[in-house]
Image 1 (cartoon, helix red, strand yellow):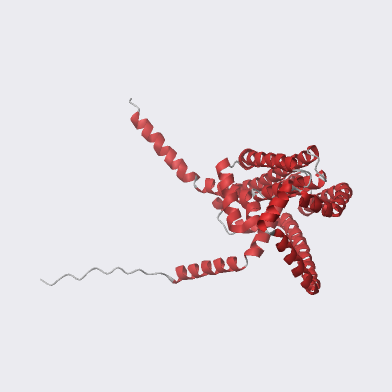
Image 2 (cartoon, helix red, strand yellow; image 1 turned 135 degrees about the vertical axis):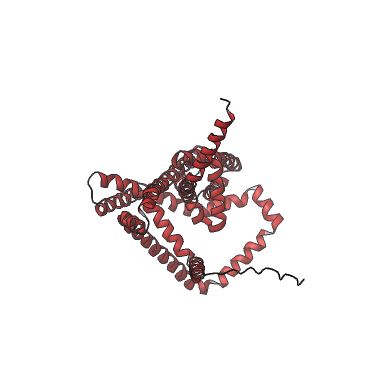
Length: 360
């Protein structure tokens, strides 16, 4: 009897599948190559979606979408300008005074025992001397370095202007964009997912408001601590701490380093007290304030909030940390709706099993 040849399994991949995989691969490559641009677009979208509920409320009261968006942006710009005008005078005076006092602070630090021990043990005298010599030798290149810095600042200003207008245009045309995208979907799909999009936008807005509220608290704590310890320029320190705290997890640590460094110019005791205050507040902010605020704002648990910030900051740095909570909120809302049918079926199966187990 002749042996039976082994069965052959043939896998056929259609042209449409290959084209789909190719298109997906191209999109991934383009996303990697233009990651910086995509992050700017995401930031603009987060800002626009954060203001969208306010504009939507004005539209429901009879305002035109474009007019409402312009008024909201004008109000935001006016608020920023008013804040700058109110604080610019005192802050600028304190900054100028701080710069003039830097040589005195440096001399005081040099005379401190702890500084002398560090300098003697690390051989910092030679290091500083060599650094000054290198700086003097490199003075001819200072002009080109200054021009490079000026170019970088100019580029940052242009990027900020582009980001602002991109957010404004997206805010004005958001319903049109949403309707156009849902125009490719079936009516039942639009009926199901349109509320999810609106809820996601509300979640992004709530996360932004929560982040601003936490930053105000951090700046207030820093300013009051600096004033109570007799640190110079408490208003400047409060402003720096509040702005840095807009960056989750990382910003508070950088602000704490600045506060402790300034406290060292006053005394070791003040620096230790400021360090203790910042350590305690950072733990309270990271593990109590953040989870409570974001749980109420975007219904994220403490574990989800911390994990989202840690992962996003490790992958995308500062921008990732800023975008972490809004994106985590959106992902949670989308996953909850996508899994709703299966969860409903599993709940029905469990209820049926319980009815079967209950004796008649």
